[in-house]
Amino acid sequence: MITVERTSSLLPDGRRCGVFRLTAAGGIAVTIAELGATIMRIDAPDREGRLANVVLGFDDIARYPAAGGPGGDACLGGSCGRVANRVAGARITIDGRDIALAANDGPNQLHGGPDGFHRRLWQGEALADGVRLTLDSPDGDQGWPGVLRAEATMRLIAPDTLAIRYRATTDRATHVNLVNHAYFNLDGGGTILDHRLTIAADTFLPIDTAALPTGERRSVAGSPFDFRQPRTIAEAMRQPDGQLPADLGFNHCYVLPAEGLKTAARLSSPRSGRWLALATDQPGLQFYDGYALGRGGSGFADRAGVALEAQAWPNSPNRPDFPSTRLDPGGSYTSELQLQFGAEG
Image (tube, rainbow, N blue to C red; front, side, top):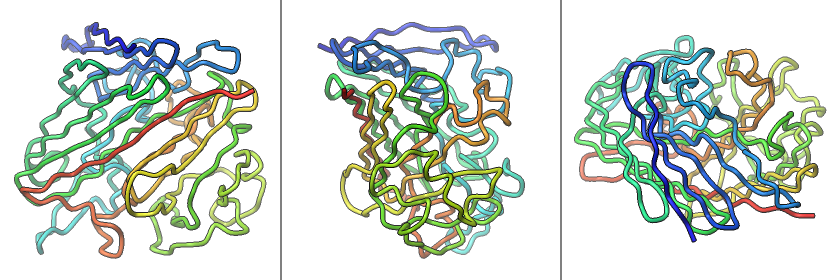
């Protein structure tokens, strides 16, 4: 049995924000806010059946930067867009027209700009097994052309599984890459260094000093990026590689099979016994180990959580050799993500 409860909180600016609690009897419980279409909590049982929150976030929605809360903007649990990840030079060209975007990561745009979708108040509607959230983005929003209608549907499709479906339509040619930016910690605290990770990818995209893909697709074989077999994040970090400077860490996109819903990653904790299996239909999976969480004032320590972002490849609007993120009138953008939780002895 699945129950959906709606409450609301008053934001510091006087707006009211709906908060939805999805609960599966004997399974997981998920808290989702209209602000940013944000996953605030996922409570999942460990091997002893004890529940703990396995994503980074706050119980008070007013603590999020989108609500005027303190600290940096780590996009905790938010739905990033119009185009998540980085766009080089905060500029794109569509049909020969050069378009300037709002920069917020040095000269580049990151996660849709300084006022990305994870900072907006979406409109939520309770469903029998979840919530549907919608957002209207005007023409020129953060520089992006076209009026865009975005939709995020989050449902419990099984007692242990949260399904997220993004959809968008536009009235002018634009680009779309909607991504949930949850950070996972399957122990409910501490760091993720001893978490074991598997990523079903043979290649990844090396990055430059601005964290933008160089254009190369490199084999993971023999490198710290090889997670085709389970290994701890700490073990991988100890393997020297020019793509892993000492003061940084993993923040790279893995190349996934292009077609259909497939299991892309598995994360597990030997301490709690909890595991997460992530399935997506997207061409990429961004693995960010949270190495800068403590430096940006997020309220969490470095590597307190790991982000596994199912998405298009970074800077795709400027890379005709990458899978396209372009959306035209009459078309529809969709993205499917499933998060299944369990525990093992």
